[in-house]
Image (cartoon, rainbow, N blue to C red; front, side, top):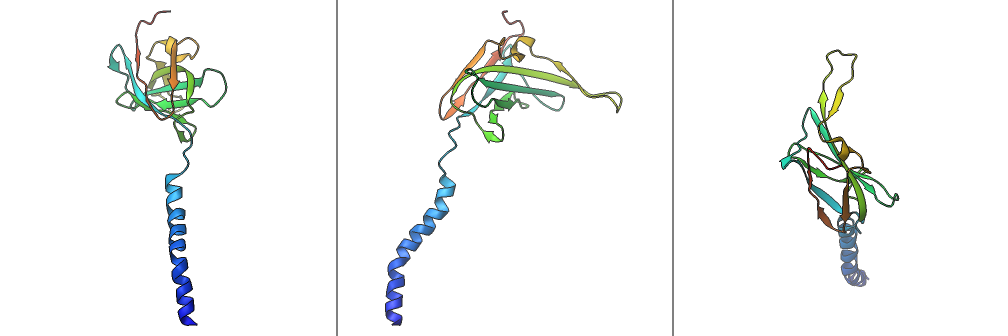
Length: 154
């Protein structure tokens, strides 16, 4: 009787191991979220547009067809950005209108005042409809650099 129980448990052991392996590995692999990863660099007249403690800039992607979730990337100290759609990394593949704005933050002199932003990139680029910037996002990884001009054409 003990031998038959041992024999039965030995036969089911490989199935149990496979089941445990699947339970462990599948959450790690996942099915993917369908978002394309997007990053790049922003330059102004060939020089990196850099963020930092008194500079704050964003790269904004708006779906060209008006449907879907906009995505935002914060410009870092090296002028680089990574897009996020809410709390998720990346954005849906498709065509996007792009706006870019970098502001210098002037700290208040009085505690009752608010910090004041001053746009340092040309105003044209801060508008998705006037910037003239568009992006085609493909599935997978996308590297999109934007070279802005201090004297953009109207």
